[in-house]
Length: 228
Ligand code: SAM
Image (cartoon, rainbow, N blue to C red):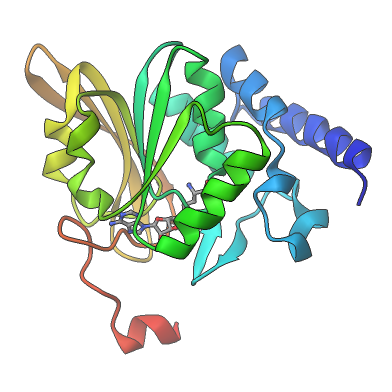
């Protein structure tokens, strides 16, 4: 499918996300208009790039649906020049959207536990010229990424059983963390705000993410989980 058609589809899906109330901030609208999702999906799904649905990226993982990317990015309230940590790199698409929001003076660190996906994301970010603003790391993001702390914003794009304590600790005062918390099957999006050394937690909408595995996440999946 040609680039012009996909560009037109991107514009149309962003217009629907605005009409549906998922996109409200100009900076987030601009970011989603600029990042070519077709460069982050597997070639066989290219024609579905602007379907508002998660798509498989291999290793049992997915690139999130467009409305979920819009919601998470809006809830994060990131801005120019900020330092952002994303936990759960996947395809690298959300990291690219965040890179657009923080601009040339900001930076995004994104951490992925599956090395092959981190490599896939890095290649996607290279193709789309985001590597100067995004650092891809392999590791257990439930422990955060201490070498680059503190962060102004942290986004977790996998489901955690509880708010991972290291992520709250690595957040700067005045910072904001967005994380889906709940069971492996359904979660509530939590927004953690750190202010004057105090931590406030707000609950937002229900959502469904793949599990965050690791020290402060779920333990490795059982055979029963893998079969479902
Ligand atoms: N943000 C991604 C994108 O734009 O394509 C989609 C993320 S996908 C829904 C969740 C990702 O979290 C998967 O790639 C999974 O391997 C990763 N993940 C799960 N547990 C993790 C952990 N402890 N640390 C880092 N990544 C983790």
